[in-house]
Length: 329
Ligand SMILES: *[C@@H]1O[C@H](CO)[C@@H](O)[C@H](O)[C@H]1NC(C)=O
Ligand SMILES: *[C@@H]1O[C@H](CO)[C@@H](O)[C@H](O)[C@H]1NC(C)=O
Ligand SMILES: *[C@@H]1O[C@H](CO)[C@@H](O)[C@H](O)[C@H]1NC(C)=O
Ligand SMILES: *[C@@H]1O[C@H](CO)[C@@H](O)[C@H](O)[C@H]1NC(C)=O
Ligand SMILES: *[C@@H]1O[C@H](CO)[C@@H](O)[C@H](O)[C@H]1NC(C)=O
Image (cartoon, rainbow, N blue to C red; front, side, top):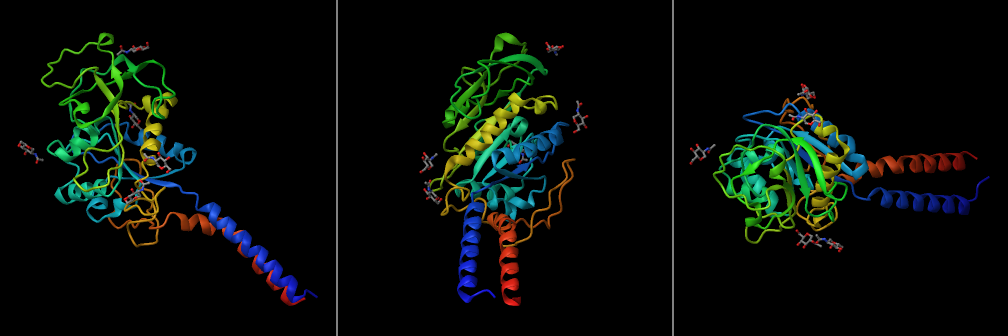
């Protein structure tokens, strides 16, 4: 026969376990959206890139979703993400409503990462140009080249050699990203490849290849500025299978996530995991073949709840079992 005292003590202990398990499971996991829409040239490395980033997600504490559906912008579903990754986009990938929603996301403290031809989309958008840093102009044919690593002190450069041998497109830009406050961390060594030009714009020296902005310059007055990171590298499938390159990209994504301006690590933030849509169902993982997911996907509004449920379930079952066996004796 179990005494009432025993039952009370057991229940109290189990309740403590549940609370501990719940609080452990609220260790935040950030949510990042990869946006890979294209309206012009389409890189066939896009599926490889998405797969590569998703494969690294758990190691970096990042839950990736990917989409090519721009209604996620106009209906506010982007607000639940701690960062948006623009992957190899080209052309007018967002309409006016989408661009306005994107501007609002940035004003609300959202973080931005641009990869490769992301600098060749939304060419008429000054906001986008500032948030990314500069628009793409042209590149010579894909080439072997050496990239100088100017500063190893960041997560996106710490694993790179001083002189990094790459096979990629050496982009030229229409402006100097330093003019909006970006800090260039990778620079193409122009003596290691041939570029017939012509150079019609001043992109500054040394030749910008990747950079970061502590405060993304796309933010409007009065906004909360998150972080921005851009790398022009990432053309081929092979590059997306290179661990050195992946350390660069994943380092950039995890760096922007430390901005403190999204709910991943700031409970009063306006955007990020835990805010946004009021729906409770999960965004079904979209295909990585480039097809657009349906506009009816309804992402979760609270990233922590599912993990609480998972971690707590065994304890709840144990508590139920103990209670039932106690009552039956
Ligand atoms: C890159 O990978 C994709 C599959 O993800 C494939 O369709 C494409 O042909 C590959 N590109 C090259 C140049 O091999
Ligand atoms: C971008 O601006 C140029 C020059 O003003 C114009 O010709 C073009 O139609 C614009 N494109 C879009 C998509 O708005
Ligand atoms: C780039 O370098 C690799 C290895 O050194 C070589 O096999 C390849 O042919 C080179 N590619 C070009 C386009 O020069
Ligand atoms: C974020 O907050 C932490 C803890 O307060 C602080 O150490 C860090 O410098 C902040 N980072 C930024 C980018 O403000
Ligand atoms: C947290 O977010 C709020 C709202 O965006 C912002 O005002 C505040 O400065 C952020 N806190 C930190 C530590 O950055």
